Image 1 (cartoon, helix red, strand yellow):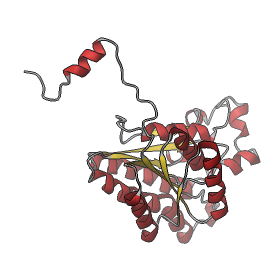
Image 2 (image 1 turned 135 degrees about the horizontal axis):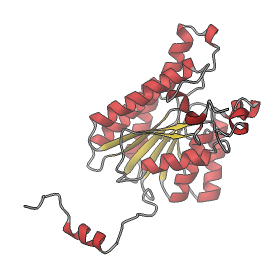
Image 3 (image 1 turned 180 degrees about the horizontal axis):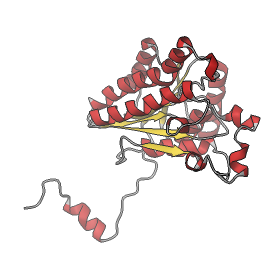
Image 4 (image 1 turned 120 degrees about the horizontal axis):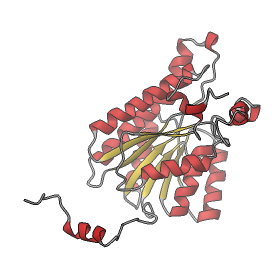
Amino acid sequence: MTSPHWDEAQAEALRRFQFNFPEQPLAGKTVLIAGGTGGLGAATVALLAREGARLIVGYRSNKARAADLCAAMEKNSRAHLTLIEGDIAEKSTRDRYLQAIETAQAPFAGAAIFPGDPARVPLPDLDRDSMLASFETNCVGPMLLARDLGELMENSSSGGSIVLLATMQAMAAFSSSLNYAVPKSALVHAAHILAQQWSRVRVNVVAPGATIAGMAAASIQSGKYDRHISRGAIARFGRPEDVARAVRFFLEPDNYITGQTLLVDGGLTLRRDRG
C-alpha cells in the first residue's frame, strides 16, 4: 500500500535528476526585520531588498540612521521600507508591527529579530537592575515579539519562519559575559520551546561571533579579539554579510529546518583556547 503522502510525480522528477532550487523565493513577500537599521540587521535588509522582499523594518529610536538606510535601499535596490519605531518589549510597538503586516500588500513570510544590547557591566558592578535591564532587552522583548508574530503565522494557512539573534557567548563560556550571555542563552532555549510548540512556524537562531559590525565592533576595534587571529583560531573577523546570509537561509520559504542554532563565528567558539 502506497502512503497517501507519496508524490509520484516528484519521485519521477528526482529519478530524472530534476531538482527544485527556487530562486529569489522571498521576492514579493513581506518580511519583518526588527532591529533592522543596525549593522547586522541592515546587512540583512540590504540582502532581502536586493531579492525583492517587501520589508517592514523596526528600530528603537535612531531616526537619522533609519532615514539613511531607507535612502540607501531606495537608491541601491529601488526598495521602499516600512519603518516602525519603538521598543519591542512594549506592547504598543509590537501592535504596530502586527498592524503593518496586516496592511501589507504581500503575504507575510517571516521575521528576523535582531534587537539586543551588549550589556557591558563589569562583574563586580552587576546588580539586580542591570541584570533585569539586560534580560528585558536581550530576551524578553525578542521573545514576546516572536510569540506575537509566530501566533499570527501559526494561524495562517502558509505558516512562516522566525529567526532570533543570539551570540556565540550564549553557546559557550566566555569570561566577563555573564549579564549578556545568560539572557541570550535563555532566548535560545525559548526558541527551542516555540519550535516544538508550533507546527506551521519554524523557529531558529543565528549566533554571531566576533563580527566587525554590530555589538562586537567596539571590541574588535580595541584589539580585544586580535589574539584569536594571531593564534590561528580564526582566519578573519566576521562580516555582517556572513550573518545576513545565515538569516536569509532560515527565512527561505519551505526551509526544512526548525529548532536549531547556527553559529556564525568562523570556528572561534571551538578554538578560542588555541595557543
